[in-house]
Length: 378
Image 1 (tube, rainbow, N blue to C red):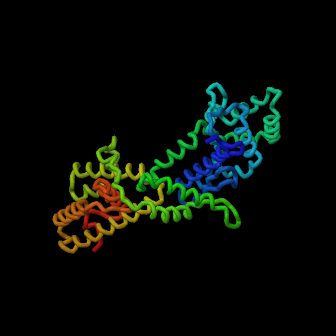
Image 2: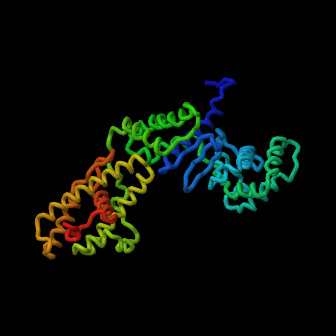
């Protein structure tokens, strides 16, 4: 269908692209962090550790970031004009789908010092051209500010060029591990729900546009209940892999606990491998994902409770002063703990033994339980 002259759909894609990036950063929020939209720039992440401010530029067609491109200079002008507010940000980022010619100074921008960046932008405006009214006005306004202000801004300024276009970005977002546990065909609807939440935040008075980690997490948990009705097996990508350096784990508390009950190197080696596999699986699939972290922590607490119950039972069935019997009963306790059926958690079903064994070793590593029964007070 041919587009009407007043069809503004393609220009509105820039707004949608902007909010996709907002959603990406919301999914990565940590405890106490907040996303601010259109408050200090296009997008800002407010964090005690690493606050960042972002400007977003989307071009539907192939676009070059020339040295006088207005996207760059307008963004720089905004940051300079609001330099006092920018003091709290560790990084200022221009995110753009534009490509940079390798011959231009912008291609090496992120590797330049603040002084080199200053000289780069200074040199760009030294040549006076016939048709440069917009550029010249912004350029002059920028250099009306002190060198100290400019250098402070330039030191933080990073360019993210050649970013994927809106179609590719949306496709990539659907594959984000955050949505693991949701059927593929339901993921776009889940994203729509989250986008709707983001877009409606400023409606109520005082009409500020903040997305706080705690509030976003609560909303996600509620929406997830509608979309994750089917369980998924625990990913097994690490089920047959081993760490390159096993020796480094021998000083960990969980390995010492196994030696304390007189199990040897073979058992310790198996424990190290499962501990590593569990850690890698958690990092790859669950790290910084509030829903799965909540489910995993609950699962871990349940495992700890089961182990404590088994231990109490074992302690009642022998003479605690008999050292040999203590070792035997401790080995029974260890074996029975690792023989527990793998417990499903959240939408993960079935769970896998390597992951449960690794989680048990993590509980021991945190010194929440010991294998040697004699170590505990009666």
